[in-house]
Length: 484
Image (cartoon, rainbow, N blue to C red; front, side, top):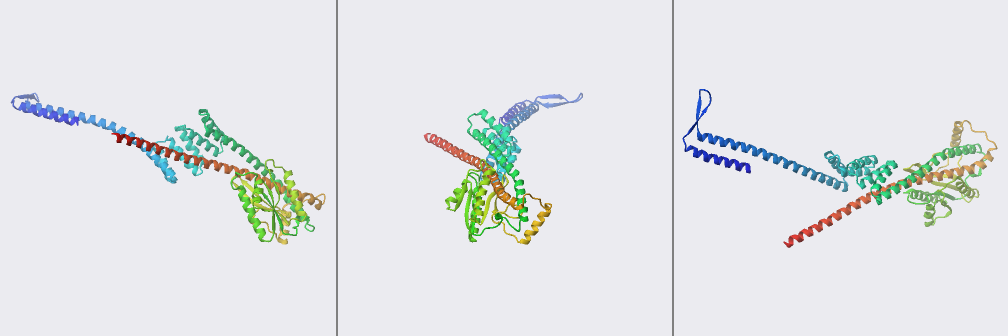
């Protein structure tokens, strides 16, 4: 506006001067060449000078206005950029909270393309990675967030990711760094305590797994040996190899002494209940021998007939304990009180996989041990011809058998009770290892769910607090406007 006003003022002043000069007929001689000159009216020179000045002033004003406009544009662009980053982030948060994980992931990635060091976007991407089960991806994003801003919650998240990926040393280092800044940080103290407890739980599970891996070959070879001896004594079978007359079946149920191990106990109870129902439907009477406090409590509340209960065995499990239980079961069987004894326990496959398994303990089978079976498909008797064929194949595979001293019947008297005890001891080791694995997975799932619940409740609290603050500000502003 000032430039245009100046130009108009200059033109008006020039026109006035030109009008005054036109009243004078004076001319000015302007030499164009050595032999030629122009005579220009003085009024024309004055008007030309004013026009040139006006154009120069206009150009200078335009340059100045362009510079000012460019600076304003840069400031507005930076303001819009900062505001749009916040808007994009909150849009991603809204998408994440509404369950649209894919949309939130795309929004956060677009945000990081504009600002690679955006710590909050990295933290949110870490949360999405955890929801997908990608602990390593979550760790990468949380570490990137820490490079941008080292906040306590980011340190805790990265420590948890280190723990999930099996790197407790790095997790402890991050927690100690946080505690160095705030010695009374409650969440860090709890996380460090849980880390120590998880490390001890892992060591216990690892020790139990090593014990069962070491016990399996011995138990398999013991069963194979007693099966071969039994086949050689087929004409005069041992008393522990013959099914008794009667309809009473003893179910030996192996559970845990404590809870907090997920569905470990519930699965063995469900399988026991289903198997007992099928046996009773066939006209047999079912009684129980429970190993583990949880099995005793469960079936006692339902008034099931319990022959005997054994508890607190798994803290320091020894073969003598299994042998004592086996001798009592053998006594029930040899006295004719029970026609059959079946064993139900949880077979250990891995830390994340366990399976309820059923076996017939008594009478002892003359077949070499097969892979444990599910209680839904118990071992069924085979025809004599199939038994003979399988026995011959197994003897041929083992090189024709062994030479025994003393006689086979004396060996069976000693070997069969020990084989039953070894079978039970192996089942107890399998169950103890499965319990440790199930407890590890249950505690990890509970910790993860608790963390997610804390995040949701914190967000709800912050939203509620912000809404209350906004309402109070609106009331204050409304009151001030009413007083005017």
